[in-house]
Amino acid sequence: MVWPCNSGVWFRYQSPEVAYQADILEYQNPECYSGTLYCPSKMFLAMNTDKALVSRDGWNTLLVQAQGDHLQIWLNGRQVADVHDTTTASGTIGFQVHPGQEFGPMKIMVRDIQIKPL
Image (cartoon, rainbow, N blue to C red):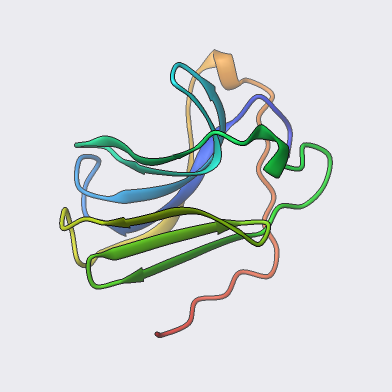
């Protein structure tokens, strides 16, 4: 990871307004960090405010579980989001890399991606 960054794992993506994202970021207003759950039409559904959970120099493990309307995210083994929301029940999975000069040197690296049925 090359910081600053604003990226994430889109899931149940249907359109830019109808989707969820498990964020990979460091955001200042409001203050939130990787593991935050974002929904474009509703903004932040759950915010990770614990900066210490994020490894800035090494790998981070992000686990996303979406079962029905129950959405959960774990960052490095600690649960950071646990919400119920009905914005969308299906869609695609992908990665977002936010455009813009403020994120100019951003670089996202992934490894060991697993998608499993619940």
